[in-house]
Length: 442
Image (cartoon, rainbow, N blue to C red; front, side, top):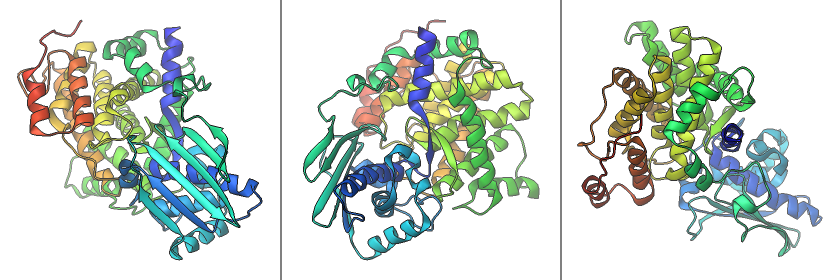
């Protein structure tokens, strides 16, 4: 039964997406609103209003739209409303004809798409209202990027799950953050990945997909000048002799190149982690690159990738889908654990790696999804490799320092508190003054 829960969590928290997740979620919401409008007999929306939470707007305003030269949530909303089919979820923009994309762009340029800040308590909230021909379609996505809680046609609800708990909504594939937080621990993840998982036979298809799909977008990022071309230029630096080609640099290249392509809107899918494609890339590609560098066999690599992604999922379950802190720090912590395992480390050593990551990159802020996410990812991957190398030797940031505690679970809880309560001096000092000194159970 417990093994099944690990698989359920992986399948719930890892999914295919194209482009930045937030514009994808906006396009999905708009597709629901546009479909409701079409069911009312209106072929095309004439005006669109998007009301979204601050975190959604922050992450969607500068992200590239896949397969186009456009960026921002107004274009995503227009594309979704005019031609999106909600069945494709976060890949909805992949299946919109080019002529419809251009019609959507014309709607934006005509000033017919408005974006407002929604005054709501949720960090992840998107409402799209599409109007045309005297009819209205309205849809709301809340809490999770694909969690459609309301669809209305001319004010009459055809779907209404606003008062339904996600866990009780009838979707057996969804595992809520609360369920994940109560089930996953660093120890249980370690035991599952190293003792119980049969990587070549167990149904971890989403992990195999993450390796394959995220490798493709990484290669795509190296193929041309996407965005700031962080991965491509790291590779160039190695070829020029300005940097050493080693495990760390190759891991940075693999992750940054994927993020370069994704944030520039390359029409290539990614397997996301906890609602973020960049986190999916960061939790997967450094581990894959390290495995290749070390000439690790496939079963061991799959264990390490699973370990990395589950650690990231465990942290995000308390961290929140969207945050004022950069998600690359979370996924980088997962990668540090996966790389530590590849280097021969055990449970104690991955705990050391986690403590090193939290002691290092915790305070990196999220200032929106954009091209320089790849730069932050390369920084976090560099830190992950350093944390893994230190952890493998049993070296760790001590519990006397900062928000790090003796027990790794408490350290991760402190990390989550900074995500949800902010990084003010008073919050940090409170964590420093109220540490527990119980050690990890070996």
